[in-house]
Length: 73
Image 1 (cartoon, rainbow, N blue to C red):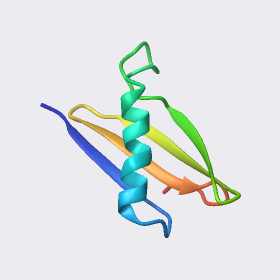
Image 2 (image 1 turned 180 degrees about the vertical axis):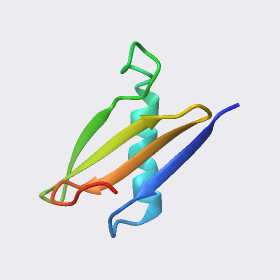
Image 3 (image 1 turned 90 degrees about the vertical axis):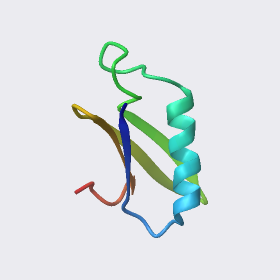
Image 4 (image 1 turned 30 degrees about the vertical axis):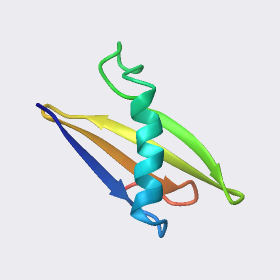
């Protein structure tokens, strides 16, 4: 069993971010020799660019959502 961690580093509401993460998950594990969800996915929302970056850990997948003008922590 695995765990999904979502880090929302924006002012966007959590349900909207969850919907975007769902889109990444639906595309499947396509990075890192099909072991990891897409490493970087870009979205244009209301004229701003946002990224979801994934990190594969031993027992979890981490999705970090941030505005492009910001840097993930």
